Length: 119
Image (cartoon, rainbow, N blue to C red; front, side, top):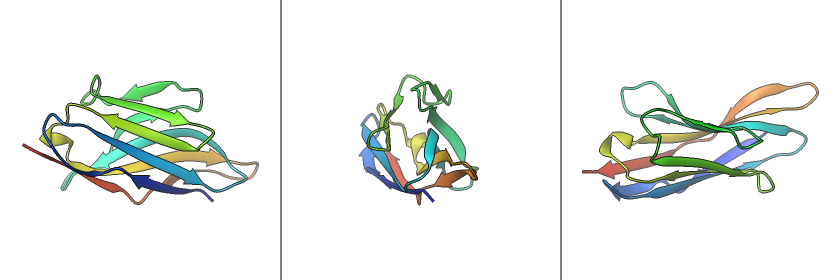
């Protein structure tokens, strides 16, 4: 089992910045990719950014150039630096990872952290 705990959400004005963190706990599993998703009211959950355990990254077009995903494998932590925030970035942000051992390969989700960007 892997537990994911997010932190760093909050209220910020448009143009501001926030940094989200997600710490994974648990043993006996190899964490593969880690990602951030978000879900705004009335919308489906969407992928924001993903990072492999080798550091390769990919982003949704809507956040390219503004958001940066990174990870510290030793700390089993993934970060999302969000700059130049816009009101349309308002959503609950969820941490996600894929982890496996010899008998299991599955995705895990955090509880989510609210990000609100005021205009």
